[in-house]
Length: 112
Image 1 (tube, rainbow, N blue to C red):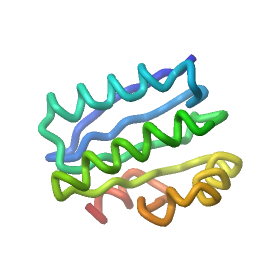
Image 2 (cartoon, rainbow, N blue to C red):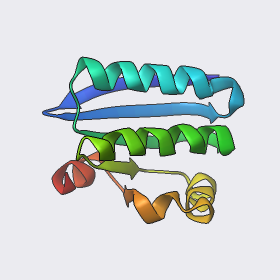
Image 3 (tube, one colour):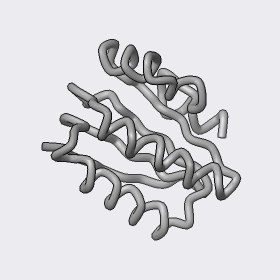
Image 4 (cartoon, rainbow, N blue to C red):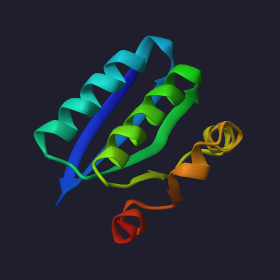
């Protein structure tokens, strides 16, 4: 089960994620983020992962897919407040080599 909430700041969509980013949640995660990005004509996306308890390859795939979409628009992606175990998986998978990581949403917004 996954819970997503969205807000916007100029051309940046901020998504706050809670729950498990796994195969079961991947389609919902992808569809809701894509819909929010289209609705808001977002150039950038910030994913606040503070509430994520678990992430697998399906969740990583959705994050990478959103990264590719944003890059094609010339935008940026930032990951915020990932718990230690989730951040470790992001590091091992190479996601943090392409997406910036910040402690707070404000820091990420300033970098956009």
